[in-house]
Amino acid sequence: MSRGVIVIPTYNEIENIEVILEKVFALDLGVDILIVDDNSPDKTYEKVQEIIDTNTYNGQLHLLIRAQKEGLGKAYVAGFKWCLEREYPFVIEMDADLSHDPKYLPAFIENIKEYDLVIGSRYVAGGGVVNWSPLRKFISFGGSTYARTILGISIKDVTGGFKCFRREVLEAIDLDGIISAGYAFQIEMNYRTILKGFKVKEVPIIFEDRVAGKSKMSKKIFIEALLNVVTLRLNKKQILKAD
Ligand SMILES: Nc1nc2c(ncn2[C@@H]2O[C@H](COP(=O)(O)OP(=O)(O)OP(=O)(O)O)[C@@H](O)[C@H]2O)c(=O)[nH]1
Ligand SMILES: [Mg+2]
Image 1: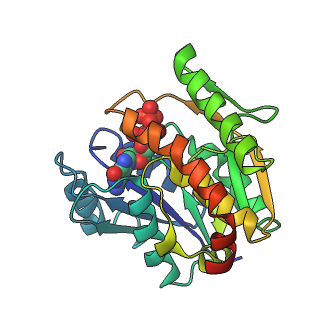
Image 2: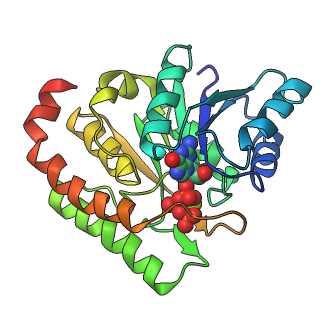
């Protein structure tokens, strides 16, 4: 399989951006990276542009700047469209905050040869979370259980954001029809992928809480996730037809 691309959405990740790029490119996996920055007030995008200009990563680093912060979902959709305009066979989603250890990338790249969606999972054997408060653990695990039950899907880690799509999946999904802006986006993408009949695989990851920068998780994002799961289930027929 020729080389894929990792999409990393950023909003105020100036403290993390250089480290994550160094770590990924040090693995020499032959994949490109696209940073999708929503005009971060801390100017994360300027740092990325500086690095691109030095050509440290031989043209493998790309930047898409959006006008304003519209949530993770919108940033990813813009990133996916950028990738689909190019020849990448697979697209990896990854956070900038070092919660997603690049050491798992080879497992994604291996499994995407056989599966259509590979999910880095905290809730399969060998997976887990470190440095999370009991409340955060409860919200995440409870959220996954809630979404899995209502949507009737068997994915254990429904909300995780470290995953890999084959390009055919992104081509098959109506990206403009996606309703979720916050982390419900991850649930929605999984649901749409499964409704299309694609093959999904979960690989274990240990997720580490961010050390630098601020979380963008909010009550609004949380409530959106709760509501959207129900809306998605109610719209099942329309989703099947539209995509
Ligand atoms: N472009 C863009 N990136 C975003 C937006 N919201 C979050 N991100 C990025 O998406 C990734 C995940 O966001 P986080 O704040 O880590 O959210 P989280 O992982 O749910 O929460 P914590 O790990 O607790 O901080 C990070 O790389 C963020 O910078 C947004 O509105 N636009
Ligand atoms: Mg995070």
